[in-house]
Image 1: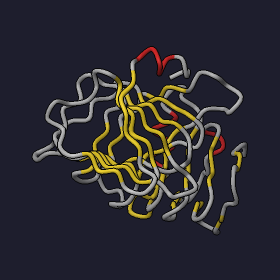
Image 2: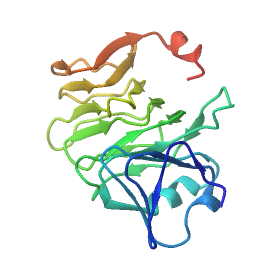
Image 3: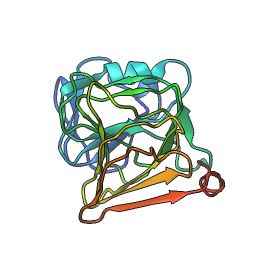
Amino acid sequence: KTAYEIRPRDWSSDVCSSDLGQLVFTNGAAVPDTGLITVGATGYVGYGDSSGNEAAEFLAKLDPANVHGSFGFDTDPTYYTPNAFSTPLNLTGFASDARLGSVTQAVLTAAAVITPQGVDYRFGGGGGVLGVDSALTNGVTGRNVVADSPVRQPLTVYLRSASNNFTGTVSATHSAVIFDQASLPAGTGNFILNAGGYRSEEHTSELQSRGL
C-alpha cells in the first residue's frame, strides 16, 4: 500500500481508523481493500488523487456513522497547484460532527455539490486550505456554514461560488472562512467568531496568486 502517514495512526484488524492523527491515501490502491474507515473527533483522513472516479470510491470506504472528525481531499505537498475534485459529496448518514477539511490543499469544483448531513455545511480540521467552488444553498429551511477545527489543526476554507444563497449564520472556531468578492450571499445571517475564528472577503486575483 502506498498510503502516507502525516501523524500517528491507529489500525485495528477490520477497520482503518484515524482517532488522534492525520492519514492521507495517495491513490485508490492505497485505500484498504477490506473494512471501513472511521475517524475520531480530532482525527483526519484524506485522499490525494483527483483522477477518474477514485474519490467516490474513497468516500464509499468511509463508515459514515463513525466519522466524528474530519475527512477530505489533498494534494502532494511538493505541488504548487492543488488537486481539483469534482465528485458530488452526499453526506447523508454521516455523523453530525463530521467535517470536510484538508491537511494540505485542495479544491472542490462546481460539480462537487455538497449535500450536508443536516442543516449545517460543516468544515474544519486538517490544518490545510480547502477551496469550495460548488454552491452552498438552502434546503427546506435555511442552512448555516460552520467551520470548527481542532485547535492544532485550523482549516482555512475559501467559499468562491457566486451562486451561494444560504441564509443562515456563518461561524468559525479555530478556523478561517474567506469569501471571494462575489460569493457572500446577500441574505446571510449573523457572523459568529468563536475562539481562534476568522472571517474576511478577498478578490479572486488574490486567491489565484495562492494557487487556488
